[in-house]
Length: 195
Image: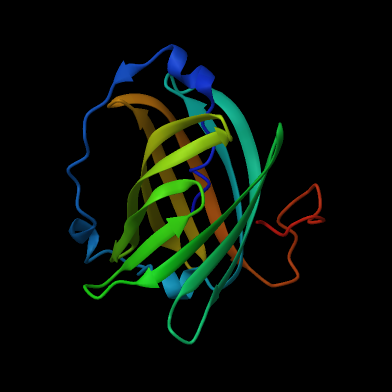
């Protein structure tokens, strides 16, 4: 899921275009298959590969990622993510806590307010604010994050990024469930522990 997070740069804000608000509900995908259940797909190792595009659709970054996912006896999930961009490495750890009404409460250190992960059919949706950058030099971006399971062990992830209601970019990636010994990061996994 995305570091999608993950990846905007202040230069994206130099030119913006208006974007409409999404009114699509994840429930509209309830009948679609193959079904995507967070606890099943995000369990073990997941490799991801993708690109970041600016407001015009131009690719501005590319990346490979590794997600190590696990669940405790209370049903709380941890998604430990490492992203190797063409210009550096980034980390994120999501915590997914079951919500009484279904879905999960989702939190991460660079997401200032807890959000809700909902799922139905072949889809997962999250909408949240990402605080991107270094301490003292950050921007808050709205992330509209959609995941779609398209085949066994394969999920497409699309995240639209906006600021003040204006479209500033998009993250596109493919996630694949892999064996525990699979290599997701061409640059190696040394220093993989995220804080």
